[in-house]
Image 1 (cartoon, helix red, strand yellow):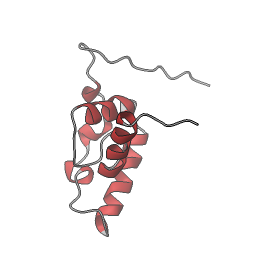
Image 2 (cartoon, helix red, strand yellow):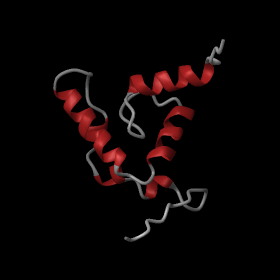
Image 3 (tube, one colour):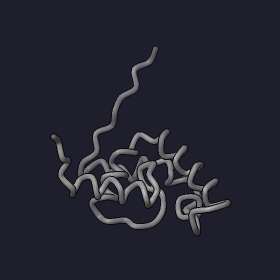
Image 4 (cartoon, one colour):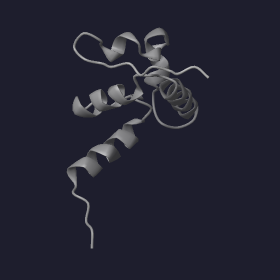
Length: 94
């Protein structure tokens, strides 16, 4: 069984250089709407993301730079908004 290396991304190694979406139509990641055919595009885009070694870096970039449209890091616009809310709102434990 081959061991897959995990790339380290920094100023010299930009995650965007290895992102699988780089060679995919942008329309797939930026569908118009969130019903019908757009749901199919979102699902396919997420599949591409989940296969990408830069998925987490992409997601963090999208959240930190407030990308409000499209699929980034395998998450839809609504999913990223929820992540932001969870990070801002302290969890209540009782």
